[in-house]
Image (cartoon, rainbow, N blue to C red; front, side):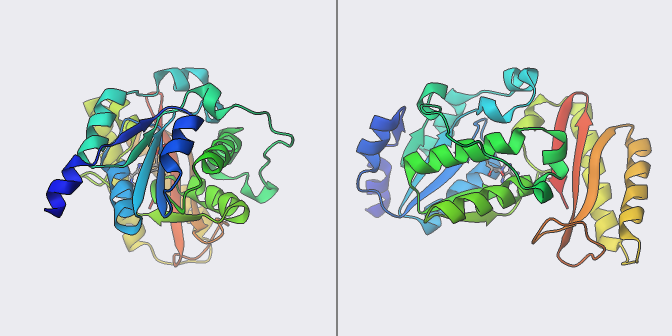
Length: 280
Ligand code: AMP
């Protein structure tokens, strides 16, 4: 009976602030999953976690122009709204928010969002303005939606770290970390994987497998940073790829680390012109 009732619950598609206000009027205990669409099992795991923990779940699909520091990257980012809506309907998500750029950027900030000097590392160092754009959009979305919990993936670890710090300081909202979902060959699922050729996909899988084995067998030494740097050089040559960064950092504060415990290897690399990130 309960199952049958659930089947009749309609997923509401919201396009603007008025729709949001009307639909969310009485929705307390709301779980929110911000996405840029082209949904895969990584996004689905976040949605399922929200459905378990929260009374109602809202997924947003918004490709945020201000977080792309490269227009071509924004233009070629995969877009699959029709397929996404089908997936979300099947998952019985309560609300989908698909705002226009105007709906989100409907006011000008009085003070710019700035990163601390210590946070200008990893992706922030190489993608100028990227996280300022991410934090800006997350602030605007949280302000409009007022969720109890936001679910974000560890796949984008630095994003999760910075958004959590900003949002939990400003709102009574909790940002909940969700484990990275990988394919059978250990590659982290990503919308950008849709842009890879079969050969490139294979290369990415082999690279991540190599790095996982390496991390598993690594022995702690004094000069870990140098050891990781040498490994980066080895991978660069072995796979003939451009590795933007590969660093061992503490997961609690993202500081460079010489210890394996509580640390991960953070990597950003290019296959053809597609930029992929992961943390192992
Ligand atoms: P995106 O659509 O790429 O902006 O991602 C939306 C959310 O899904 C972010 O919180 C990501 O960290 C998360 N996400 C993306 N890929 C994965 C994955 N493979 N496993 C877990 N979460 C993911």
